[in-house]
Image (cartoon, rainbow, N blue to C red; front, side):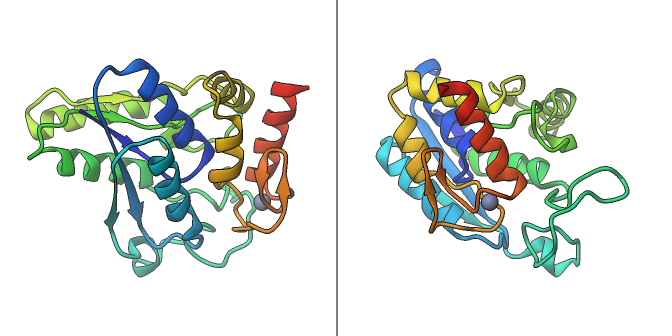
Length: 217
Ligand SMILES: [Zn+2]
């Protein structure tokens, strides 16, 4: 069995489609409650897992970043802008590393050594924990830490949003991705566009929309 990290966003839902096509083994979806502002993400993750027939567990991590006063626009009321170090305020420091560690811990007694994460380093926001060297290092560290060969699969590292849309479409899931996943940094679920729900203006909506338009126009 493989564990898929399912955030409720477009990328991880598409990664679930990919895992169903490419991994010839049962899947288990894990989501994390970490004090994110938009809990609709977890509802979306649950619905996506349900529709794709994959068991789903939400692990409760508490509001770590808020508790520790580590600011991010995803966990606190903060404007979305680029900070002086070049990263957007939507960066949640260490999040992907923590999620991979927690997923590996959860998988340990269950004998699960394969983790699938839908991160992309292309047309993204420059998050350091969405890059290839990070994935390789996380895999090596977890393998050492648990003394068993942990595999971190990030099939979309070099895919852009248009490729993700086309792939989902090829799997007959364009509408599922549009309707059931959530990307908008503002948590907007009232405005429905061909590419899904969202404010249409935040960087996440803009990427999602531009990818959709490139994929299907
Ligand atoms: Zn938005």
